Image 1 (cartoon, rainbow, N blue to C red):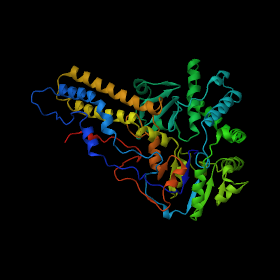
Image 2: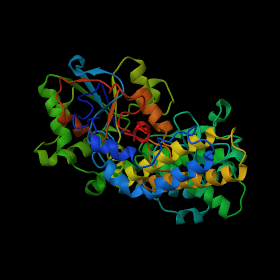
Image 3: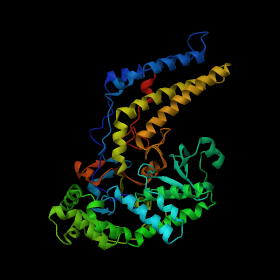
Image 4: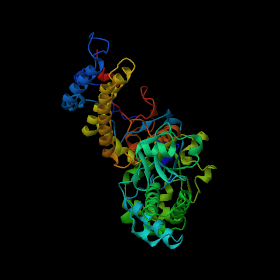
Amino acid sequence: MAAARLRLLSAGLLSPAVSRARHSSSLQGLRALSTLSTTLGSGAGEDEIERIRREFEDAKRNYLSIPVAIKDMAKMNPQGIYVNKNVKLDDLQVYGFDYDYTLSHYSEHLQCLIYDLAKKHLVNELKYPESCLKYEYDHGFPIRGLYYDRLKGCLLKLDFFGSIEPDGCFFGRRKLSLSEIKELYGTRHIGRDQARQLVGLMDVFCFSEACLLADIVQHFVDAKLEFDASYVYEDVNQSIQHVHRSGLIHRKILSEPQKYLIKNSQVFRFLKMLREKGKNLFLLTNSPFYFVDGGMSYLLEDEHFDGNSWRELFDVVIAQANKPTFYNSDHPFSDLRGPAKAGWRTAAVIRELEDEIEIQNGDSYRFQQAKLSIIHDLLGKVHATVVSTEKGQVYRALLDELNAERRQCRSAMRDLFNSSFGATFLTDTGRESSFAYHIHQYADIYTSKLENFLSYAPESWLHPPHDIKIMPHNAKVPASLFSGS
């Protein structure tokens, strides 16, 4: 897949700047945000629901204390290398690289170009209505890791366990409500039979595909025309593939490299460092050689390379590799899954990671995250009293208020990332996403940019932190900090 990644990886480590230690004042401040240490069994004769309501009101008054309480909490390193499985770099002698989005990085103009070329192919070659030409690529709509339902025509965001994100289901460009999701699917969880109808949109080039799928579905909805969602997928996917296989996109990029390619001398510092350490390097790409050659020559022109000298960085260059068929698989993560099954060590370079960590480190996100932890604690107490309380209306009123507050927190956190689908790695409920699941399964390490490896010694022994169960970059406000003692 075109998502940037590297095989038989180089340097990693969880960022040494990341520490799990908290200042005692921070811990005490978090514990003081609400009087959650009150136990439901104390205070004979006191109504349990009313007691929880008072805790809720106290918590709301103390929201202003959250920034002070969390200011000393450790932050994650946006340029860090994050580890899912142990990797001993001394044992690695061969490093493999993709070209697109690993060695080369593209500007935001590329997705617009792919979208426009595919849209024109739909109209000119597949005879879609000319009115489809009015649509334009929307940078703010798609994220990586979505699924398209070929039976129902919906774009879905799934969590780590295969359930539909409550605010992550779109039919065309309209977000479906939870009741509409349940009406369509019966439940939020995608079963095995339903999963067969889903197509994963996982690589970097799928941004434009996801947006075009949604826009074409919306076109038929607006025109009140019946359509087959599976044919829409086949036609859009065929158009996207045509843009690549015909060479249209390659010729356009090479005609204006300054518009589409972003130079970065740090990547080539890393490659030269590996060569100096005696490592063997290869480049494996689906792109044609003339495109790679033109791109690498442009990217290296400021480094005083000439002609084909960039090839001296690699022992082997394989173009038009026909991945993922190269690995005998059509799995959406075949570029990672294939080598992993063969015993290779794998890494994923995921550009969105840096921005998402920056957001998670920010005061706005952590403020909402702390509020959400308080609300979840209170909701747990309310649910624990369902059997014992007889005040159904009072119970329901408090439950509705807490759920409304929870929805507000989730919405505010989602909008910090992407107003349509939220974060790439997280769902609104705080669970890791399906995309995160695949990275966890098939990438030994992952990072935001290839040059991040320059910050770590090539002799490093990389290992995941002992207290992380899923994704090591997802720092959470620990629930224990809000319980008493």
